[in-house]
Length: 224
Image (cartoon, rainbow, N blue to C red; front, top):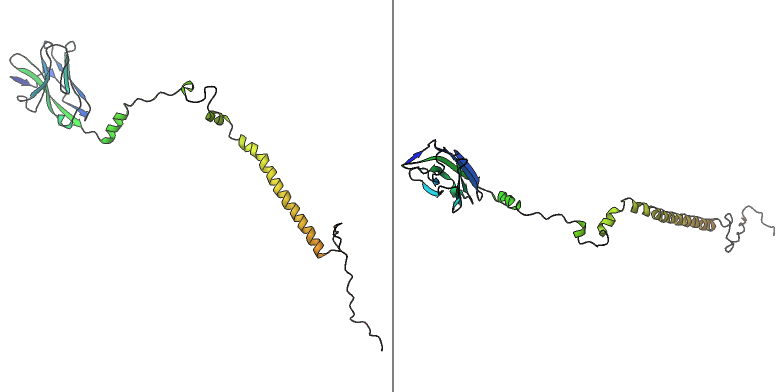
C-alpha cells in the first residue's frame, strides 16, 4: 500500500535540466527513516509508477542505467542524479520511502529543455584545454638573442623617416639645379641666334655683325 503526498518525505515540486546534461533531485525525510530503503520511481500514477533505482538501506550509492541514488542518513536526505538526459526523460517522478505496510512518497515534475546546436557547441568548446603561454626560453627563436621581429619592433618608427629626409632633399636639389642650368643655357643660345651683335659672343663662336643695308630710294640719278 502506498501513501502519496506524505509529510514523512518531501521533494521539490519541479526540477529541470538540459538535454545531454544532468540534474540532481534532493528529497528530505523525517527522523526514524534513516535505515529504510529509499527509491525513485516514474509515472503519473502513484499506484503504477515504475521504480527505477533504490538504496539498500545504507549510504552506499547505487547506480542503474543513467540514474543513481544515494542516502545521506546524517542529514536525513537522499539524492537522485539523472545523467545524459534526453527529451524522453521529461515526466512525473516520485521520491519515496519503503515502509512496513505501506510506502510514502512525494511527486516531482521533471522537465528537460532542448539544446540547440550552437549551445551544444559552446558547451563542448569550454572543455577544450587552453595551451599555456610559451616563455622566451621555450620558444623556437635563436638561443643567443631575441628574435628578428623583436629587434625590428624596438626601432622607433620615426628613425627611417629621419634617415631618408636628407637623401630626398639632395635628390630634389639636384633636379632643381639641372632644370635651372638648362633654362640658362637655352636662354643664352636664343639670345645669340636672335641678336648676335648685342649679346656677348662666345670666344669660340664669334659671329661678325652684318653691315646695314643701304637704301637707294630717294637718291638723285646721275645725268647722262
